[in-house]
Length: 170
Image 1: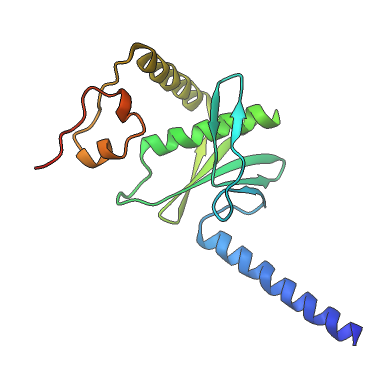
Image 2: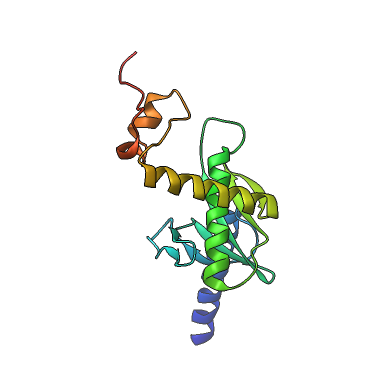
């Protein structure tokens, strides 16, 4: 009787393992152990006191001897937006600073297609430049709009600082 119970439990566990692997593959999540997920249950944010940044990637995966942040996005375009790449770069930096381990890349899953984004010196420099510009804008109180889309203004987290909101209507 115990042997039959053990076989049933083993079969059930194997089914769950296959299901998780299939789900990871269909969502473009790389092979490796998922250490953190913010999609099914809200997770604690990562925080860096050095860079004064905080954020929550959708997943953190340990692949080989590296930690990789994974961000899942959907959209109408064919490729991820540059702002999404920068968001992933923030998660790479946060992960490096909170773990003390080198993060070589992140994964941006856009419309179920995984894009490996190297966290290389060029992206690191661009991220630092953007952060400096954003903080400068916040200090000065002058934030300039870089688009013509009213919908983006409506949902913008910087709306309260912006003096150039796209007006409602046609």
